[in-house]
Image (cartoon, rainbow, N blue to C red; front, top):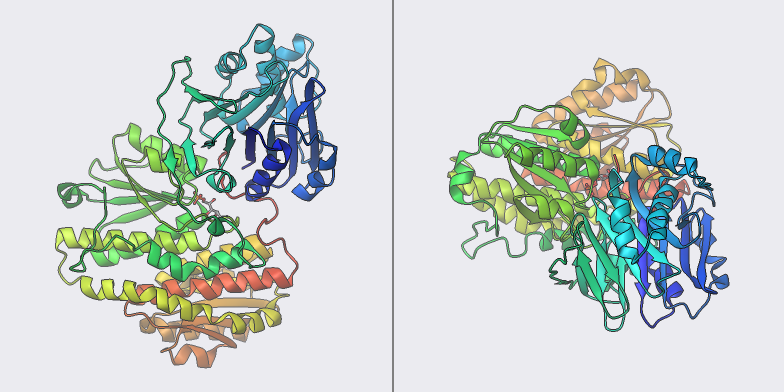
Length: 609
Ligand code: M6R
């Protein structure tokens, strides 16, 4: 939800922040803008639409500006127009502000300011924030004190970044529930919503704490709390390979991230096995806690929710541990019944999803044990959970999540094995699971080799008017994720459900032009799947099956077949089908001419409700 960048140093600041913005465009692409010092005031360039529109006027910005701020917008308040694009000025153009989040009480604040004669040029809550800051600043500086006074009047979630014409060379940033990361350099400092934007410039980063205010100049960074008390800070060194945050020869980040999955499968297991083959999870709860847990609630959104469903299948089948999976937005307002001995698991790639974060805080207020499964280091969910397991998948840039899903399921698998080990669950063949996991990366490589066949099938079905995604057991979970991918990047309407549910209503939608994608990796229900396939075909639908190389009946019944290798564990064979499903979504989207890495109306990290 909105990308923020800021730089102060010796370089051409406009060039730097624009480059940073390009690395953040996945966070929002409705409009973009930039502010810089110019002729004793502040110059602003902004354009509706993608960054290329801003780039086309960037030549008007001075090349000698040594500080600048920039923003790419995912619209909440007000349409994606030039006027609503950030940065926004206050009444007297003393300050320019960029913002990620929502100021919930902006209408009250706006009315109050209008009564004092303020005139607004946009429909945004951000412009109201800028006016409040400007109003406080009129009463006296320094800028960080005016910002501190202003944010006391705001309700909502926000990361705000401000520059002033009266204090050149200074950037002030405040964080409240929307991410901001400071990059520390030599003779230069910078900030951004996300770490990948900083990597070409520095590896030393400081994740801003909730409710903290930072003041950056070229050679100082000061961080204070809401009352102005200086906070100690502990920068982290980021050793991600820069290439992992770049496209590396692929046409799209999405394709690159799909192809990274064999590596990711290895990475998220790295350091998590002892020499004797037992699972070792650093920093999780002590053994007696695992013995005591009587129920698991998994809470997440979107793709992470789908990974949670795989966790439920595993925890119930392997551990006989009752597990529920909730959408974060439902959980937080649903007054859930929570056992004091339960464990709440929060899954999030970004670690910043607003609903998941709120659900986490709700559990903490009820003293429920919390465990995060998170990708982004130092993110809010990672920091606020009692314990966190990182997925170690590296930066995921494309808005549609792929490698993070696979990594989340692998971490859930390791966790289930770890609990089984502690609880000495009878009948769980932990060594077989360990072997299957260690082979999985190689099998994922094989699964990627389906790409040519995927492309051929995608060419045949690209004009489908509706796609069914169906399966049984773990395959039903995969079907939900396969459908989400096709829907979000190729804009194909989808109908997803367990295969057995189809005849209870959705079958009414089947007619010529409908394609049914079946997950069929569980041989114990192959004959049931074949019956469902026949039901679709009898009504004119086309069937594509994602199955294993060992399956015999499903391929004979299907119009098209994509086979993944068979893992020693059925659950993992099922997981492998996500690879051809992701490739199918990618190739259909490409053939339909869609914006793959930046699907319409979506943003990577949903930090608003
Ligand atoms: O960062 P998170 O994992 O918390 O994000 C959750 C969802 O917003 C995310 O998975 C979303 O559904 C993706 N667009 C799916 O591809």
